[in-house]
Length: 357
Ligand code: F6P
Image (tube, rainbow, N blue to C red; front, side, top):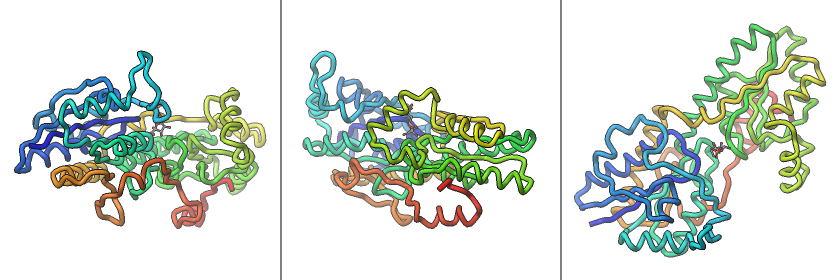
C-alpha cells in the first residue's frame, strides 16, 4: 500500500489538472494499492490539515480543464518559517499532517516559490516529488514547464488581434505580457505574433532606441508598430538601480505598470498615438493547449513512477526531449532566464525585431 499526498501551489496555469490526472491514472493503474490525499489550496491545506481522499473518478474528465481542481494559493517562502496569526509553526504543522496520514510521499506541483518550500520540506525529512508548472517557464533544471505553451498561444492571439486594429488606425500598440521577472513568454509570443519591438527584463531597453525603431518604421511607410513588452521589462537606467531602489521607484510611480510608462515616453518623444493592452490573467486561463496536455501527462506519469519506485527528492523535468529527474536541491531558488546571447534572440534580431538595446 502506498499513501500519497498531492497539492498545487502558487499561481495556477493550464494543465495542472492534466498533470494530476497523469499521476492519479498511473498510480491507480499500477499493481500496488494506493491512497491519494489531495490537500486543498496549496500548502495552506497541508498546514491546516484540509484535504480529501481522491478516487479514480477525481482524475476523469479533467484533462482539458484549466485551473486546478484542488485549488491553489500563494504561501510566500519568506513567511513559511514565521508563525501564523495564532502562533502556529507552519513547517511543524505540515510535517505533523504528513505523518498523521502516514504518507509515503508528497507530489507537489508548482513554480519557483513552491520549489523552495518543497526543498525545505525535503530537508525536513519528507519524501517529495515535484512537477514544474508555470506560464513563465523560469524554473531551473527543465527546458520546459507546463502552462507555458498555452500562455504563449493566448498572448500571441492578443497580439494578433491588436495587429488588425493597429493597422487600421495607424497606432503604436503595446501588448504587456506576463512572465514575472523573465522574458520567455514575451519573447515567444512576440515572435509568434510578429511584434516589431520586444522588451524583456534580461535585455534592458533604451527608450531612444525604441522610439528610433518606431520612427524608422514610420519613415518606411509602416503605419503602425507593435511592441510586446514583458511586465518585468526594465530600462537601462533603471537596471543600474539596486533591487530595493527600483522597487521603491515602481511603488512611487503613477503608472499602473511599466508599459504605461513606456507608452507615455514614446508619445512624448515622438507624438505617435500609443495604446496599451494588458491580457493579464487570461494568459493563465482556459484549456491547456495540446503540447501542455501531453507534457503534463508525461510529467505526471513519470512522477507516479518515481513514487512507485520510492525515489524521492526530485523534480520531474524535460531535458533534451526526454523526461528526466533533477535533484530538488539543484533546482530550488534558481531562476532560469533568457540568455541575451542565445540563438533565438539573435534570430529575432536578424528578423529585424528590436530589443531596444
Ligand atoms: O508566475 C505566474 C504569474 O502569472 C506571473 O507571470 C505573474 O507575474 C504572476 O504570476 C501574477 O501573480 P498573481 O496571480 O498572484 O497576481
